[in-house]
Length: 340
Image (cartoon, rainbow, N blue to C red):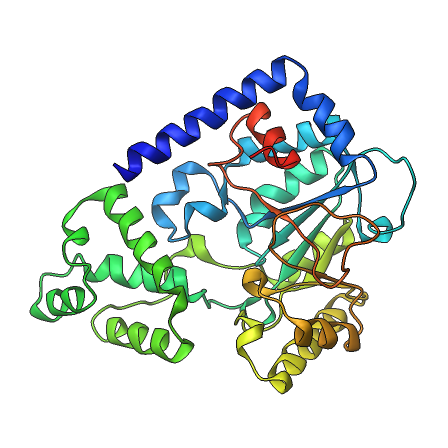
């Protein structure tokens, strides 16, 4: 029933988007609503569909390269694509503007998104988590998904007991993409757990699964790749160090995360780091104060919305983009405008 309701909602949005687009309503709303405003887009992964059976990232952060190409074509048609140098400069009566951002520094940003950005001559910002660059480390979500997936393939009492302990023994009886999606959804539901609890769960599965290097698809960029982006007009920003939610850390830890990541990126690139995207978008006044005191010009969150010269530069609103909300031009434009 829940899946049916979701399908109906998605179909309704698609129909309304097409009606608005082909009757000119979308274009009218865009000009009226977004004049003097900037739309900041949040991308995470640009990953081909044929590689997703090897990834344990949730669909909420996935975009196919063909869709990303379409997005840039639409953006260039309707918006002025900008970088942070003019983000909040307060131009009067300017055309709608767009800033493209990427969180997490995934390797596929270099392999698939970067060539498309160059094709359209579009600037962008890539926010990188320091502790994961040029390493085989993987975010806990992808790592735990990988471990649970491989545990489900083991025919042993230990694996069955562990899957039963976490209530996923039934979903692991399904096959292929259905099982993979169910595991990914389950892992996503664990976000409320503490880091200590998540580490304990990972260790339990590591006792029965040989992790090795994990999935090669779910890795992050190297410094050489990041330097190439930097040399070709892609701004590199901070995504802190550990990718832990900053609002859950003590002030001293937040200072360390922001200072260390900024300094290390600047030393590696010989360039000034102006911006940070907060992991998971979590923000409070303490985070804003530390961001300011550490010398950042901008801080990016995940709250939906558009920005202008009056926006809080240390908690800038963005619009998250993935294939489920932006797989065609009318729906993509409706998403950017905020019709839904």
